[in-house]
Image (cartoon, rainbow, N blue to C red):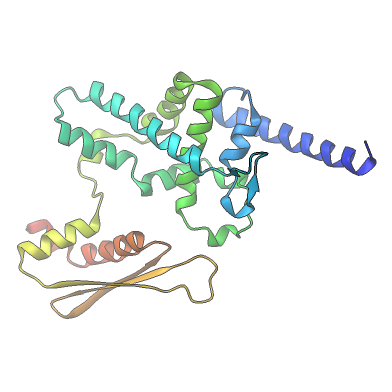
Length: 246
């Protein structure tokens, strides 16, 4: 083995050891296979492939983690609210695992510091925080099993953040609220959404919301849905007193 290869392998071992210790502090248990967690923090922009040519990034783990998170939350709500109807339980689960909430969780855990990406962190968008949080859950499941996942979700999601009474009053879709209000009040509304990337690497969208011919608010984000929600939230607060009285 030549000197260069020895230096590279030594550096890699140091990185793996550092990630192991950081994760051990974060998870409160020792990871078995560190490569699963490394994959959970690998962005597709790195364009890594395994020996079979399959992409190495967090997207498949994100899918897995999303499903496990949903099942743990569903089980918790089923036991916590025995009188809850199917519709109520579905709505409450949606509030807990909303993209906005998952992004907050990822930020609170500072998972972005582990991410390997070829895109500047300022340009990857807020959703990456929630995406890697779900990918981390997927990695925990593969590495340690369902019980460890359940414990991690209870400690990091349910215990610190889930308050049933508060969640019952939380708005999950400002766009839905605005559309419903306009329809009830027979107001004409228009969501004018268009691509607005400019010179930025990551695609952005802008939206203008007009009510009865008057432009009320604007929003701009990395997805149409998020831009519409941002603008709708501004409309909601502009008409909050009227909407609340409705």
